[in-house]
Image 1: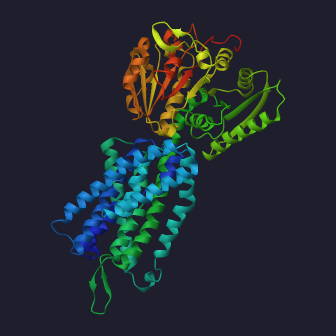
Image 2: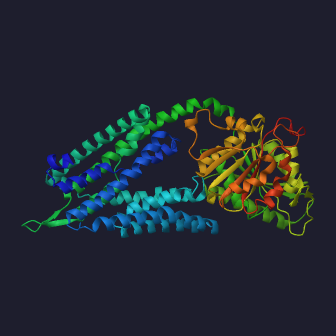
Length: 592
């Protein structure tokens, strides 16, 4: 404000609006930190949160200053602005996620989902404009509201990022470049003077803010550089504000020239400022993020070396469940590895039916397309064998498979009911046949982490994952393997994950450094394995149950595990569920 009023000689309203331009910021360099894998670093989180608050307040300031400069502020202005802004924010933040959740449950077509997301973003921008705000605020809030429903490894997110990076951002930057009148720089020095003052002040101010943040939160120098880099770029909100100020005409000179709230020199200076700050932001973010990524890589180098390369096998047999099985496989794997997925369809070699191979090819092609939409490569495997279990076990050995993602066995109507469990009327016994003979054979002949998935709703609409862990699970050989998969699920989907386990087991599940625990992972003491149906009281409509299982006579085996498939059919009917069978020492003598 002082620089605009005293150095540049602007009016007080123009100076305040200019200060709003200085305050706003654009995360133009965010793809850099995302690509380097430090998007969840504390410095990045602070910068993103600061951008949300700063841009919103800066654009609100724009609305107020324009109203005051044009004389439209009266006693009812503040009430109208406050109520309209509150209603707009409530609709976008509260109602939009509910509508999106309903739509994603109802519609699984990727094109329709993308069109829906665009429609919601444009609707949010329109509502913000009706409320007296800049449309960019509504679009920004819409993105925040829909973000949790779109996993970053999903095909929908891949489409959004591709179209944004390939079309929207280039056209936006082209539009910015076309606004500048380069002849103004040759007519006088005013535009260059304004640009120099703006660039110098903004760079110094953002660096001071980053330095104060570093001292307040005890961050490293590289984290300070990242905060400075992310917050120093000025593009979207700045351009929106300067265009509004430029189009506000306060009067006319005796020569008939319009007197604008922000002059043409400020518009041209802003374009130069955008160019300069984007360059500074990119180089600063790249430098700080690279150093942080290198340090993180050195710290986790030994851990990564000890972890085997991921090879996830997805046996496909049902066209309706292919997309969900591929989706689950994508969310439990490391996001930076596009390879390592295998889809398998087995055909009985005693059957001579060409239609079976055509159907198999169709299933495998569908799985490959789903993976490709998420920027992943899936290798198709068609195998003739004596039975499905033998084909899966043989592929596990040949391809060095680390994980299997299977669909839950569904009993066909009219099939023979399983014997009832004593003391629990109406719930069938499930000591093997409840999960299907094929799955039972696979578990008895292989020793890799196996996920048996029963999707009741799309994975993207799941809000909470409840992981029920048996006592002694930490003593199993594959404990860290499945635990790492659950953590990847939390990172890739953003959904909440709650571990239900005994106090002794929770000590091994919690990170060694409590402050490093992700915000969306919780821990609940649980010792009611003899009364698993009581979990129904803790369930919500959009929960997914994860039961960590064990083969018989192993360290973590509990008699209640034999009844869990029956519970899923009766007590927990309508909920998505995953049975996790970890690697266990001595579990399969034939395999070992």
